[in-house]
Structures are given as structure tokens and as C-alpha cells.
Length: 214
Image 1 (tube, rainbow, N blue to C red):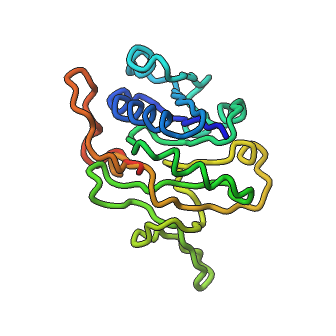
Image 2: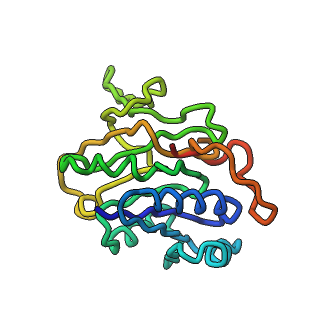
């Protein structure tokens, strides 16, 4: 099995030190070939120059236009890896983040898995299994934050989603989602909770921004 971590970025230079440094460690610890790819939506803040200078082993794809998250469509369609891990740029990652998600795809019925997402300081979970119910013709959805064990979930959180690339490209199949108990964190939510201090590194996202994937 092969994988690629796709980091979607637009003017996120301040986030990239923490994001790409931890994504590279997670990719190296995946137990399978795993690339880190920065998908840049035509940033104007020097994001691409910073990433090229600081992380020369990170592949960089510059979108033809800033199509928000739809810029990922063409990128995913052109990948040859078995699994794509789609994450936001304001996240940092546990070393075991990718390795914990890949085994779920041994089950051919699984289309996607998502990680545990916590606040930047690791104090709070921001997602859990996605639950839903119908009541009086209304459809309600919510994250069960009190359930952090591996479980089936209605959908995978878009900010940290791991998907079987071929199924994502074809979009035809019975879909099951699973939440893995370990994964990511963002600046609103990752499990590796402190950005590494470095005088030359960009400042971490301001309070309230970002997540951690555990």
C-alpha cells in the first residue's frame, strides 16, 4: 500500500513549519511509502518559496487557479498512490498519524477513515464519530465527542480525511467510514501539542486557529 499526504494551502506560510515538519515525520513513520504534497492555491505570501527552501523533499503542486478545496480534485485524479490523506494547513500531526489510519483499508468495504482531532494544546477533542437522526422531517448531525474509540462514523471530518484514492476518483461503491482513535490535531485541534520553538520558524497560528491530528 502507498499513500500521499495532501496539504491544501493558501497564504498559510505562518502555519507551514509546524504542519510540514510533523507531516514529514508521520509520513516517514507510516510503515509504507508515503509522500507529502503541498497543494498551493496560488498563495501570495511566499508560502511556496518557504516550503521549497525549508522542505526540499516535499512535493509542491501549484493549482491553475484558486478553486478552494476543489483544487484537490485534479490533484487526487493524477495521483498513483493507493490512499490519499487530505489535511488542512493549520494542523500538526502525531508521528503515528498515517500509520494508524492505513490498516483500515485492508477491508475493501472501507472508503475513508479519519483521525482524532484535538485542540493545539491537546486539551480538547473537536470531532468524534459523526452521528445522525431524523426527527419530524429534520435531519440532524453531530460529533459524538465523548466517544474517541475506533468506531464507524457517518462521515469523515473534511479537515483530516484519509481515503482510498481509486474509490475517491470513481465515486461508486458502498461506503463505510471509520474513526481511528489516534490521529491529528489542529490549532483549534493535534495530538502532538507544542510547535517546536525555532527563532527562524513562522509564528504558530493565532489562538483559535488550527488543529492537531493524533
